[in-house]
Length: 511
Image 1 (cartoon, rainbow, N blue to C red):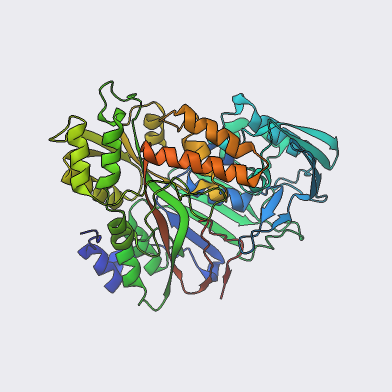
Image 2 (cartoon, rainbow, N blue to C red):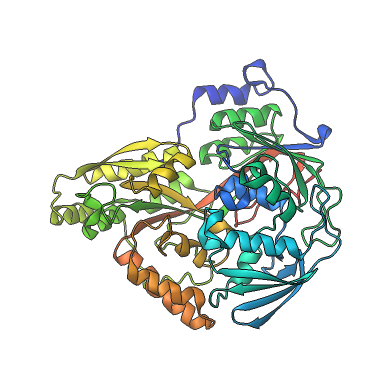
């Protein structure tokens, strides 16, 4: 029931991969030293602080550096733009910076860039999209040309984790000159790849940074050119991979991935990621005063209605697991022992709807921006208990605008926590009073405030546990499954995926 139907057109492209039916210009590959990778979503503003789309996160790690680097294999923090760091107090971190680093435009990296970046993103005027990533920063001070102090608003034990992820360093002089919009069109960083062009509706081109600093823990980039292209249709992405027009795709449907494993020139790699799929519901009645989702029994009914095992095992596949808490199990603080584990029970869901005054169910709308087939499977489960959900499928930016305006009664969301290995990266965004928190539960927020700031690991875990328990009991969301990612790429490419859903193309090479 969950299997994705493979169209005859796609099958013809498999059989005629080298034929005219599916041909495209062969601009990719080892011969051109150009790795062309494709995805379905486009970043509207490429600045790392002004988007939270996964495609933007990937580009950020290619074109910008952070102060600290976390080794994805060992989880060890290593020097990157900072060579060392020391806590002066629970709210003051002093860092010594690397000398001899230059931005892509030739500007010298120094303390001025770090101080500017963090003071900028800490200010409300910066309009950082995911405020959770930076709202722990009070300000930054220059202590010398290559020494800075970062002052925290309160203790934040996950600071190094965030400094190794969603906090890249901007070039102060250049950014002040061009502003947010200019920076999005012609961005500059210190990373292993330099962005050469940003073309709306098409993609982003990058070239290897030949001046990348030799002591980077990431190593030196090996492939000369990277090109990100936007191809919304999944069958077109597969067809272009098979004809050699592109080299790498991901989010390949499980059925397609299985079919491609036998292809001699294609490698398929699969594995679970820390991205979680979940439903949000309008528990406060912002979309309509009489919203059924204001009743906790309706929200609980939705949780009982979803066949998580079926979704994970038969549709997502590739290592996907059912999820019952709003965090990924490997994140620090993802304490799930007290979380309600909603089994698949349509009868119980119907009984709860009847108790809430909806014995025949009701009509509603559901919004989604990715994996239409997943959203349609959810709609099928809801229909079985009498909830008739009409799908609004749109681009991410449009959905986010509607969602943050409180106009969406139900949304199918996905969150990869910016690849941050701490529960705060999930709960802090969706349940701590920010733009994406539609439940606005004061008790949950109070526990999260303690969990995010305590220096005692046991206290952190205890308060995350309480918050996650209440989120589940009140059904403030419906966590569904962990995502798996099916990568498919030319067999001429040496590539390794990671659970944090960051394809590290600077590690990739041609065979």
